[in-house]
Image (tube, rainbow, N blue to C red; front, side):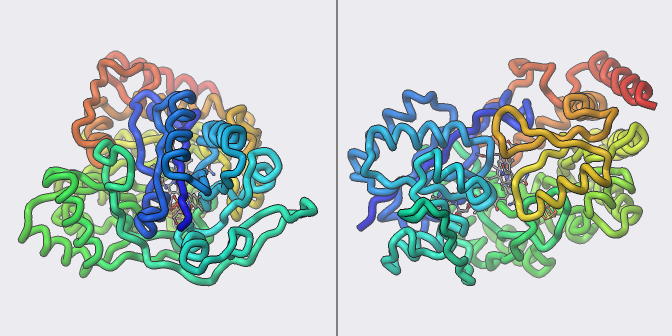
Length: 478
Ligand code: B12
Ligand code: SF4
């Protein structure tokens, strides 16, 4: 039997300052999914909020006690590279006989050469981990013979094995395999992949596949036995699309049994009046919405929708109905390449008029991550949208975007923060964070948070000041 340790490295820096300030831990559900299929062979270790010395001691202890032969580092984003590379160095120095592999389909394959050349990788896994470990553990294949693997041969040549055309059914998670699992918001994975192709998104190569509703209900039952009856889960998916029939099934189950609630993320088009009411009845209390912008031209550029006017109308109606029903919508706003004072004002005015003192949003400037279409995206930014890109100091694989000659990345960050401080109160913002984002029992006191970094106003004077500053910045660019 193979003894494997899967590690979730911590983030070294944050896309949004507020995440660093709030300090919440997130489950790496990719490795939980893999471990749930092979619990006998796999142990999970999570590095979040631990310092390097503790990480080093704890990992060494596990490797010795469990006689670990293979360590898999989960590199799902560029933000956790620093910690991942530290771990790889420690293992390489102290346990040279232990093989190190990296997985994380959205990031690791794109930096495979560096991982193999510089960070002690025996292989980088491009595919979903369940498939890889199935080949390794059940089909008895050697690492370099598995499909979807990148490695260096004895001559130092980089070899990429073909992908496997198979897909696994999305597994049910056994949360008890995750260390300190009660410290996290529990997850049920509803679907993987997304059929849309927004220009800025890295998730545009995998077709959506969905879990059966009966399996979702079974997992809710299991979560009740672990997390009690008060839990709020995150229904993980890049794009929630359960049909009316499927929602009705969950509602039927929910009426008969005791209450549970959940959060998920979806797109504007899904939020019809019927869906909103069904979502609420099925237990949804907060939904992250990939709204992105209220500017018709920006929406078209993002390839977010083919009918932007209808799209804005649908968002407006959805916000109003959801507020009546009691379902909180959190809009994701993306400041995009080519923004002007006018396009920013369109978004600002939409937020001012439609949040109804109930909903909230999170705004940030577009960034470029490596992905199947990222080169195409960068070329469009430079040649068509009038923007520029440059590598951030934290990782050479993340690029910041100067949105236009007048709005560089730093200014865009400031505008994003000012939008928050102008149009949402601490209550609007923090109330949605408490639903399915922060673990049960996590106490969040805005008084102890660094006010200047937070995307909301805490007093009328702060709001007025932010609105004036935002107006001055936008006026100054005309
Ligand atoms: C859900 C999600 C989250 C969730 C959960 C993440 C998770 N997987 O646990 C949360 C909210 C926590 C999150 C956080 C962040 N995310 Co996120 N997230 C997503 C999203 C929407 C879906 C990811 C997904 O499909 N997960 C499904 C699971 C099953 O897949 P998975 O985690 O990749 O794991 C599978 C494989 O990768 C592989 N695998 C994973 N680890 C390992 C290890 C080994 C050894 C092996 C063999 C295989 C393997 O097997 C797993 C099971 O099949 C994607 C966008 C997208 N792709 O749709 C962005 C995305 C991954 N996130 C992104 C970012 C930037 C972030 C944050 C920095 C955001 C922030 N606000 O700080 C953090 C960073 C987290 C971190 N630790 O690095 C970027 C990453 C870009 C990049 N290359 O750096 C993406 C691609 C979105 C984007 N902007 O385009 N995210
Ligand atoms: S932004 Fe959302 S809807 Fe668009 S491709 Fe990505 S996951 Fe799908």
